[in-house]
Image 1 (cartoon, helix red, strand yellow):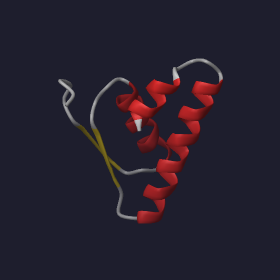
Image 2 (cartoon, helix red, strand yellow):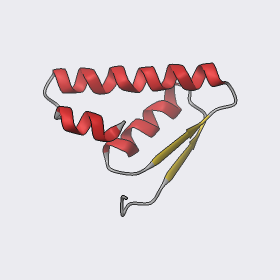
Image 3 (cartoon, one colour):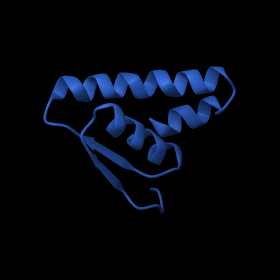
Image 4 (cartoon, helix red, strand yellow):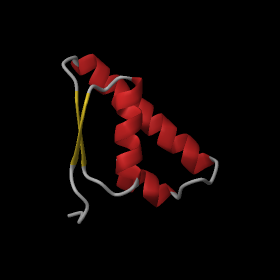
Length: 69
């Protein structure tokens, strides 16, 4: 369990998924919510792709990618 506060992000659009990703990368437990389940699915895939690119470029370790998800 993280000692950092839990973060809730309401809205999983471009800004929402970016905000959720940044908090997750910094060790916060994150809850991402949206009224549209399709948008939530898209946000999850976008975050996974973004973290994969960062890992491929060496900006984060693969373990950091997994921890953020």
